Structure formats: C-alpha cells, structure tokens
Image (cartoon, rainbow, N blue to C red; front, side, top):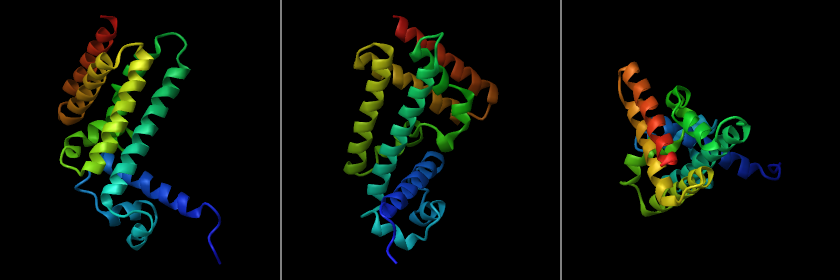
Amino acid sequence: MPYPKGHKIKVRNRIVESAAQAFRTKGIQDVSVPFIMKGAGLTHGGFYAHFDNKDQLVAEACRYAISDTIELLQKAADQETQNSKINTVIDYYLSMYHRDKKKMGCIIPALSSEISRSSEEVQKVFTDELQRMISFISDLAGIDTSKGSALFSTMVGSLVLARTVSDPNLSDNILSAGKKAAKEMIMS
C-alpha cells in the first residue's frame, strides 16, 4: 500500500525538526545521523531517502530553526501593546527563559563557532539566514542593517556568555547588561 500524499515531506520535516533540536543543544559535531533519526522516531537507514549528506541536513536545520526563531520573535512583538516591539524582542531574546531553553532557542548562538568550520554549503545557508535575522531585527527597530548587525551581535554575544558561565548570578547580570546595552543602541 502506498504512503499517503505528502508523507515524504512530513517525514523530512520531522527529521529537520529533530536535527534542529539536537544541534541547538549538542552542536553539529557531537550529533550523529542515527541520533537525529531516533529523535524523529525513525531508523537511520531512511536518512538517505531524504538527504544526500549530513551537511544538507545541517543547512536545512539552520534554515528551519532561524525561521522558527523569527516567527517566535514576531509573535512576541505582535502581542505587545504597551512598549516598543523591538524592546519586547530584546527582552524575550535575553530572558532567562530563552537562555535556559536551548532545545527550542535561537540556533545562531548555539552553532556560530562551529559554522566557521563547516562546508561552504552550510556557511552559505547560515549567512543567508543570519542576514534575514538581521533584517528582521533592523526592520523591527527602524534602523539600518549596519546598526541592526551591531544590535543583534550584542544580543547573541550576551546570550552566549550568559549560557556559558557556571555562576547563575553572573549569568543573570550578563543578560541584564545585554538588554540595557541593546536598548541603548536603539536610542542613540
């Protein structure tokens, strides 16, 4: 009996979602194809029916995860009625919740250091998606992309450092300082 229409796309999407979650928490190098497939509820033998290689999956997972983050940030901005939308996005991005929910958080701080050692294909997709994120932040803040790049870099750097340190108070202080600096960038 043949599979229903759209089955292959649904399975592929499950694999991409599993990969995005795994890469967010463990990075690229420490995640195997069998681990990703198991997370999608599949055996690893079916991987090559959907992807040519792991790099293709990494590229798609980056595209998916960044789209997911933009959608999440846009929803937060759309729900805000009192404060500026960009401040709401900064507050969410640099929140304790986002810091602690790596599995569902922004993939950019999670993978940036590994992407520089990845294939050209992966770097190209990551670059395109990073530019899309910077454009989203810039548009929301009403600033040019140069200033938007600096703003988003501040946000990513603050999140990376807050996730890195073992002292919870220092981590909270890094988030607070990052929020303050990011908001001041918009005002200047």
